[in-house]
Length: 84
Image (cartoon, rainbow, N blue to C red; front, side, top):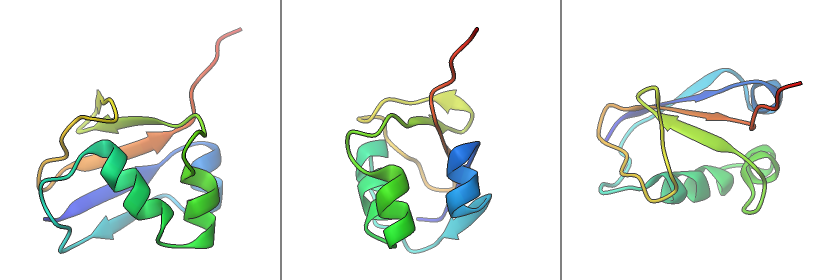
């Protein structure tokens, strides 16, 4: 499975704008992808650690932790947004 991962706001500052993943095993949920990414480097571990408030969208649709990630998807991670 091939995926495009995008990071926004403070996550982009730490992890960069995007990364391509190839050969990812399927099936995969958002939570499993986040855990896999968190194990890929110390920066990813800190930015995507369990318990840290991070939102996700799969193909530009908000996704829950148990949402499936299809082959070829664009997955975006970003911090929650607050209004004021």
